[in-house]
Length: 152
Ligand SMILES: [Fe+2]
Image 1 (cartoon, rainbow, N blue to C red):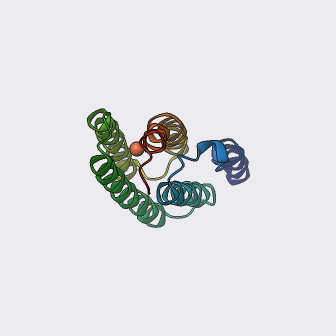
Image 2 (image 1 turned 60 degrees about the horizontal axis):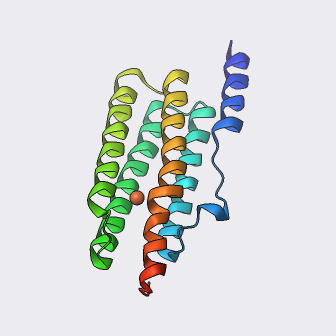
């Protein structure tokens, strides 16, 4: 049973681990740096789940990722205001929607512990969101900066 779980989890890790690639660069060094760290933190969380670490450890990592995301969003939103980015409002709404999804996952983790189902849905939500949001909405900030010739 334990061997079966380990196999199931390592397959999940291979599929769900997210790798940074240059095509995800938004062209703003600080944001790129934070995105790379987010990927690293997400993969660390995934590895903790896969290794069957206790609920407490996984919860701590999850909290850390959550706090990091909130700070990252705040910095992005500050940058958008600073450069007068026209899509700032919609972009912030997308951040809020994702923060709500993360809060729901956190509550699920609190009630059910780090189950395989939770790991799978959390990873899918995060992978999809991180890749999709970064490659479209965050990139738009970088393109705006380039177009406006704003230095950052
Ligand atoms: Fe963003």
